[in-house]
Figure 1 (cartoon, rainbow, N blue to C red):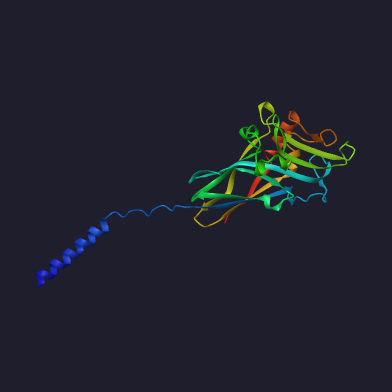
Figure 2 (spheres, rainbow, N blue to C red; figure 1 turned 135 degrees about the horizontal axis):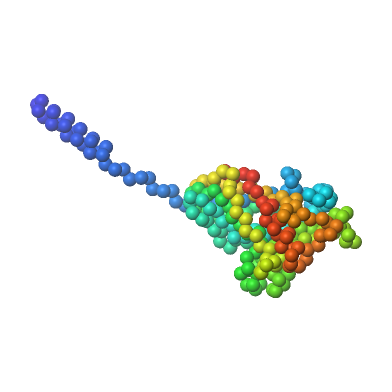
Length: 254
């Protein structure tokens, strides 16, 4: 009897030892997709942009108002340990007058961690020469010049007492998609905190655009001498170089 008990205990110990030594398979990685919401806030310095009824001061100490602000955000990507997510049919027309346009829903983002957002201000060359477009790229939106000169990438209009135009107008329409005066600009921003996309969980990225930076650097705008841009060329290029630095991410997370 004692011998039987000893054998049973030994067998049990061997069984436990074998079980402990067995290599356990790692848990299967999570799969699936979710949505990331990019929420755009147009600002003037730290204040939210208000159309028509608010006076602002640029770096040259010229006072001005803004009556219209529209621009394209295209080719949106998220980059991180999860790889690179590229939004399908990625053309968004952001308009300060249209609250719905200030939220970009990036759909079907694979689960994983992302640390950077990349996008183009404007419309890529291919779309500029692809014939009549629809949706955000429809010429009816007022952001298209002609088949030869293409899309207006960014449009800002307003007024300033420094402008010598009869109505004191400011008209900045940045266009031109090819050659040395192309005004598309690609922006890549590291998120202040990585976002972890999980199936069914929505993350948020707060993207701020500061209007003052359009007139500040590397070219300082004096509205007395530079108040109108309505064709491709050096002034439009300088304007684009300025607005390429207007975006920051103020928040990223759930």
